[in-house]
Amino acid sequence: MLSLTLDTPELIDSALETLRAMLEYTGTVAFAISGAVAAGRKRMDIVGAVVLACMVAVGGGTLRDVLLDVPVFWMESPSYLVVGAVTGLAVALIARWHPPDRLDRYRIVQLTDSAGLAVFVVVGAGVAVDAGASIGTAAVMGVITGVGGGIIRDMLANDVPDVLRNGQFYATAALAGATLYGVLMALDVHRTMVIWAPIALILAIRLASLKFGWGVPTIGGKPVDLDWHEHHTDGEAPRI
Image (spheres, helix red, strand yellow):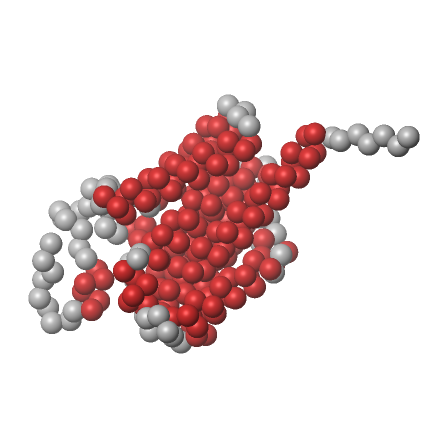
């Protein structure tokens, strides 16, 4: 009789690798949606929406890989770039019948960006650990991976990056999640918890910031509504 022996550690590692790949695709789609919607809000054409979606989807990870001096992930697996492009094209086509202004009412950009942020912080930290980085460096790489795409999106859309304005918990949420990732890794906690606990923490902080207006103190008092200024050029000050 043929006996099959299952190597449990190898099975766990394989399952975690599959989970990380799924999370990477999830984050890619989430960031691509935020990029395409932002392009529609700026009245870009379909090509602009696809380009912005792709740049947002792979930007943070590209910067991470360059800093870690490892092969850029989407060059080894072009499917990530394809997923970003297809997502951007789909959102651009949908936006022809559903104007971006309507999508903005439901904070599509902020919500999908929050999902991408949470996923990519954890994925980025994990990639750094696998590349031989220290836990502290891995946490920093996680933050860079998470916020990099959003910064690229906002700069290409001619906006002040969300990470730098309105005092929202954005980089703070990413840093909290990356720190928790490092702590759990140092404590040798089960890898499943290392992945999901930081994602949950980042989402909780980021969504609470959006819902309740929580954030870090801003210079000069109350945050300025830059979106208001974008749509009103008569010089009248917004009522806050």
